[in-house]
Length: 451
Image (tube, rainbow, N blue to C red; front, side, top):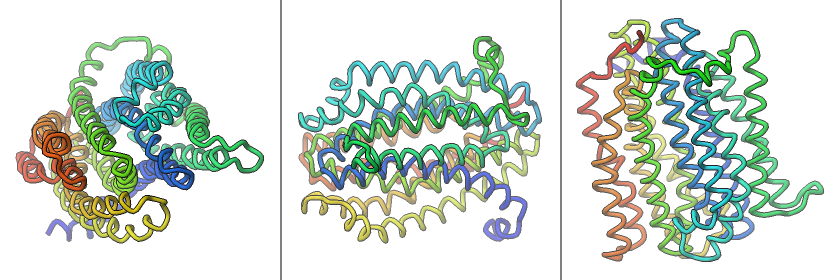
């Protein structure tokens, strides 16, 4: 019945596609940077590939914090845009930039001044630590710029400029890949810089992205970033912003640190395990782009309806998105299995690392169904109505209470096989699907949050 409604409702499909496609493209292009780094550095040296993959976990944590700030923009921004209040949107934009600047400065300082200390969190091998620290020291400058550009892109997505946000982030990624090619391998007269070239390419791409955001936002129809909104303090709006963004921040920190801990555990199990996990992580992130796009699109689509007071329509749209999540998850699993021969032919791995990677792909095929359902329902449907605390509870129980202890004890106490440890890191998303569906049916997320 729900599937029939989805097929017949052309207005719903057009609007969902208009939101999902740009967000999916943006997510895909960002994932392609990691894929390009892994592929190009993998052609040079397995250690370089593994070290940079571990080093970029620092940026992964930063992106979780910035993602929470962007989620605050998305939750309130989508509903106020549905209500038609541009003035409040400008204030929300200013609040987001305030917070993003603080995060960016913190990560810049850590990566620029203490890269070796940070790398020791993720690896024990001196070679990996040295290579990763060299990358972080240069890439730190990109972490300084990322926060501001992410706020620009977030406000574009909720104000019917999702396509432009996708063009900007995609263009920056394409330039990043081009710079990678030139600077890693030393083409077209550029020096062959290897890992340092990958870091410099990231910095150059982030500079271009920020300038493009600023230039586009000078147009009349765009929400403006005004200095008075950055340095002013609207108590009621700030409280509203953090009322919904703070649980998202908590969830992102739990999730980001948890995922980073998974990577650290695999990194301490040897070079072959770290290399195989690096490839599996890239494929996982690429495959998650569609469910990320559907989740982001559904949050805006449902949020617009709830903010406009159309609560029943918002509830009906949530039912449809849940069904679509299962379909996308099943299709993603098939694509992962089909990609295994292609990936095997493109990356140089030792026989042991290749064996690990093959097993990880089969585990990922099961994991993706749970990941798609949880992403769309929790980060999309629940977030649209400000029901953001559930994500925190579910992560505390399923990731920190079950998956992480199993992975840690399996790796360092019980000395389980590598693939068994990797399977433990995938328990959380699959295990919480029944809980997610039970909470969904309470319909606590069907709320109008505007004042």
